[in-house]
Every structure is written in structure tokens, then in C-alpha cells.
Image (cartoon, rainbow, N blue to C red):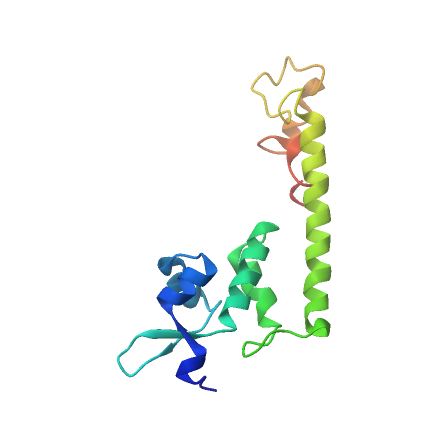
Length: 152
């Protein structure tokens, strides 16, 4: 469905309204996150509702989702209009779970910040307080105590 030109934004207008750089908009288009139509002269134009999709992408990034995860979530939402509450609810529920996980991760980081930073120290044999007998090393590389539960 082609949107009338008067209801479309140039890439410059979209960048100004969304606060997203031209290069990022072109990248999002490459990834299939947003869609542009071309004028007879070859210029990109975007439907006004693209602003909502960009707000969705920013929100996804704010809660820690990757662009791929945002694309997957948007695949279930209508491309030609704003989603209804019923269409949005499953996405919102998944994001609430993700935010709850992040809160737990941040609380764990806060609680262990004054001690050994995640028990990823290099004194594996000497860290009797936080890492007796190098039990953290057996769990894998890195700061094991600070990794989110889903990565342990």
C-alpha cells in the first residue's frame, strides 16, 4: 500500500523528528526494521507511522534488547499501522519479564560491588572469601557472580 506523498517524511525530517541519525535510519531499513518508499527521483520517504516504529526500537534498546530482538518483536506487529492494545500486550509482557531480569541483575551487581568484582579476579587460589578452591573458575570464564542468571 502506497502512502500519499503528503503523509510521508523525508529521511531528513524523520531523522529530525526521531533524533536518529540518517545512517542509522538507512541501517534500520537494511535490517528490515523500517521501510522506505522511493520517489520518482529516488529519494527515500517514510510513512509517518515509522516514527512509532522508531520509538519502539528505542524502547527495545533501552530495556536491553538487540536490534534483532526488536525486529523479531515487530514481526508480530502490523507494519502499516500502530498496534492495537491486544497486539501490543504479548510484547509488553515479554518486556516486563526482561526488565525484571535486568533489575535482578543490577541488584546482584550492587550487592557484590564492594567485594571482589564478580569473583573474576586473577588471584584464583588466594580468594578464600569469595572464591574458595576456585569454585567460580569451574563455572567458566569471566566474572561469574555478576553474569545474569540466564548466562550462567
